[in-house]
Image (cartoon, rainbow over all chains, first blue to last red; front, top):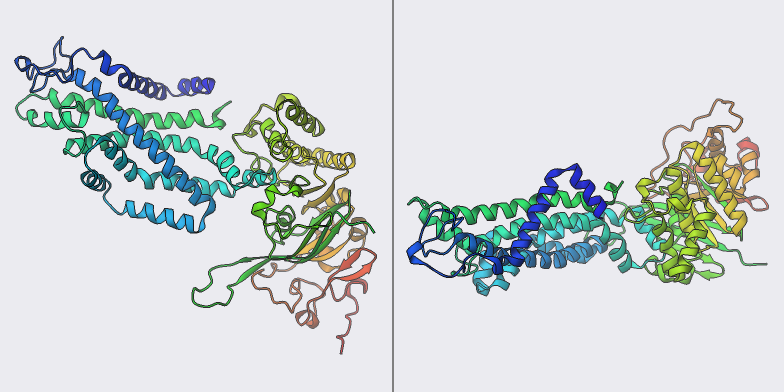
Length: 278
Length: 338
């Protein structure tokens, strides 16, 4: 695994860059809240709307809060919401797709209809509706984000399973005495995991964007909690009056995070594919 | 009389072809992949199953290895009826260990995430419950039997050559020490030079371990060398079965004759080959009252369109399904009874 990682990174430096960026984001999420130079909630009206300088790297907002500290502290919340929703949809959607593809019949019909129903809505509007109906708490944002990604996971898992259900090694596993469940979990699933991992990395980016988007329109995390979406929303009003940094820096951090997970998807596929191990 | 190891009677498998209407209760069109196959196989015996592609030999192999449920008929294995055990539950059946299958494409039949060692160990773990050192010893033994050097066992299938992959596939099947080995064209995907070594290995393993073989192949020369008996299939039915040497020397069914004539001769001399005209009939909803070979058969007459020939005994253990079989090369058509 480590050897193949080195090999892949050596072959494709962009993957190495994505992994470095990913480590940085994870580090920010882990130690950010304890290492932030300023209290992200402490306002200082004397120092409001200062442009970026040596003390406040990303400047300060209308209440004089340090934007860099707020961006850093927000990493844990934003990445946490995205990771939780991706983990949830991976488990539920992944297994639903696996079962649908492997058993076919009525399971396939039922799972397919549920996925189609979700797909029938504009996804962000659906997420808005779910959060609006259930109340804007963090668990509900996680749930809404997971639900809108459900069809994607079902389809990938189902399609990959259908291909492998007919594969020679599945018959070979039956000949070797594996029952249905065992064939599914030990033979089919490990073979579609790399694709699911790529899928997870890609949807991770969308999940961050989705959570931030919900907060941006006021349906997600509530102020004054530092969150990238809210910060962009709060800063948006100041762009016309020339205070561009209030919205730009949280937006840039958001973009870098989404970008990182998209790049990571490609690299992950290469690392996890046994055919790349030479 | 001792019980044969495998006793298959009137085995059929049909597949639905196309959709059937929601409203009508009538069955839709069906592909008759395997029809009325009756074969017996003694302990240590090797039966060759030959026929052109699409004749149902692979379906029969899957039926016999219990990956597929028959539509009707019986499969008795060592005196026990197996056709009642659904294929889905057969993995847990005690007979699973005793019937193993070697696949046509060894590369595709090995999980790409398994090393050669994992692939060979897998059935030993699930079927024999071996763990730890016992497992390692059995894997090493199976690999050694199949001529796989230990250094190769850590490799993934894509890192092995075709011949090595075939050996892994055979080692995996041999590991649980089956009584019946079904070989579904095990050498079809290999180079000719490698084919020879694999066939030698298979012959050696049978002699050494006393297994019975059902050897599916379209290579007649291979069947002739490796098998005691041969069954020739055409459109899902066995049209001739008998001792391999005798059938090849004096085939009684016109289809067998055409097959043998089309096979490259071992002496390397090319002979003019009487090609069969046209394509086989469609296996969908075959009429039960005509000879399926009619239309391609050089001897076909009116009677072949009215009455399907059944397998008739030629000599001891030798049967052919042709109205004219037995009368030398169809010279004199028999008269219709009555």
